[in-house]
Image (cartoon, rainbow, N blue to C red; front, side):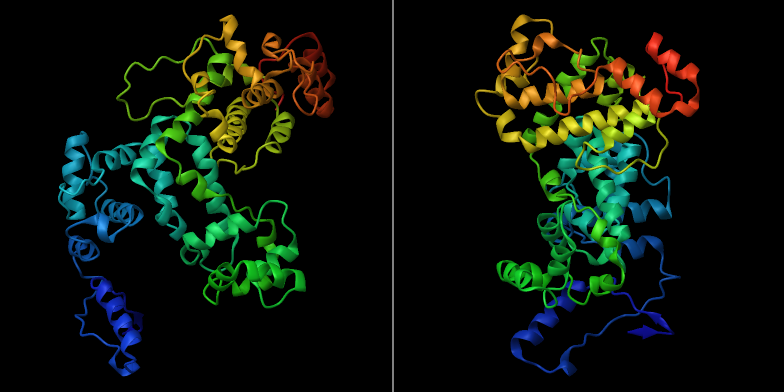
Length: 446
């Protein structure tokens, strides 16, 4: 519907529109009955506060709006008045209640919402995330709150950026049109090793081989609901989607707090291995505590771009940060990413009753500490760490059984890795090679 050449936007009463559609559908009434009396307003002259209030449910947000919709409403309020949310936590709780036109009586996690908003990094990422339909459907305030507490931001952000990057590659308004269920089906069907025929079979079930047709019969709902005319009919003309990645974001955002704590505990052990002089957090109430991986940077100071490119190929999800990073920062992100990907893939094993005690605090200098590495899951974590810092790291922890003291792919020692990097960058000069031979450099030639 157009008014003075501009599309009319339903602001209040969407539930009535949907109810009317359902009524007509069930009664078989004609399309001529599909109308409702409306009040027309000029969006340019409508007061911002009234415009925002009309879009909100005035009573119980848990019944009507998703957490993602509520975040969008907060962003809209802040865009009209950048200083609308300020002061301490209690002040901001009251300000958000007023802005959202809700009361605090329904068990809504308001304090956790304030925590996310007060964290600059997470506020920016959550705002970008909730600009997409997938993001709004998967954003859960309590989940984001414990993610922040664990200080492994880059791991979560890597997955978010990968999803956002893929949506940006798809033609059309994919950020708006791709639903949460669409993404769930794609991530289950389109892994990194997929073939063009598999992509063709999922997106265009009526135009592919007999084998694809057989697979389609096992996925009738996926084929019927995925891209219909609404989204990717244009993918035929744009093959870029074939190289796009579809990480299982629902696996990540659907984790329980207990599962998330397992990831944190293993990573906390790794940081203890590599840096006995860790950053001391004086005020644990601070909203922006230092990231866990920062304490990994000192032992990764020698990393070069060549070595980083090798590390990038080891992780399942990689989407570089837009902000520039020093090589040691990037290396710490990748080490954390690979460790947590491994833990995420073996959560049940790490949290099994016979293994659970290994997650608790333990002193790496204690002789009994090495017992955990008799378990494959923990041994694999050690192998990952040794790839990044050198095979001369903690040889006494290696299991005696089998006699294999090398991680997969025959990782070189730290000094050998540095020498390899120097040779690969020979144009940097023979002096760089001599520096590699005679001592471990403090920074990359890059």
